[in-house]
Image 1 (cartoon, rainbow, N blue to C red):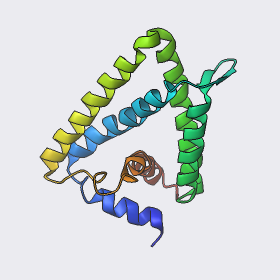
Image 2: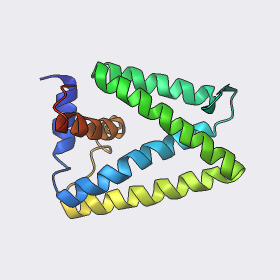
Image 3: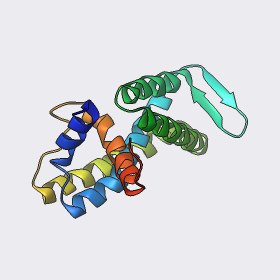
Length: 157
């Protein structure tokens, strides 16, 4: 069995309940995005591009490292996640421009609410979250959702 399938099998073990899965469908991308938002606030130089906005060097490094982690698991999923992360970075740039120095408050509220909702989902499920056992599962959650979409579309990852 491929490593990615082992991760998915373990992740699936605590995500079987319909309500928990629905909560995660909404909250996992928001948690992932809010973490990217926090990273974007780390002071560093920026690259700017027309029609995209600016992205910090720290954010670029993070996206590269996460993409390399995903690349070790699946080429297709890593490419999809790269596009998703770049789109999230564009949204992050928009939030940072709109909220300025207070954008950290926005990311904190999104992070806390979505994490609490996921804990409620796990309470309903009756299973503990996967990530305390292995922090890699913070990166598996988003691709578990991508896998779900690919599977529904009949595309092998």
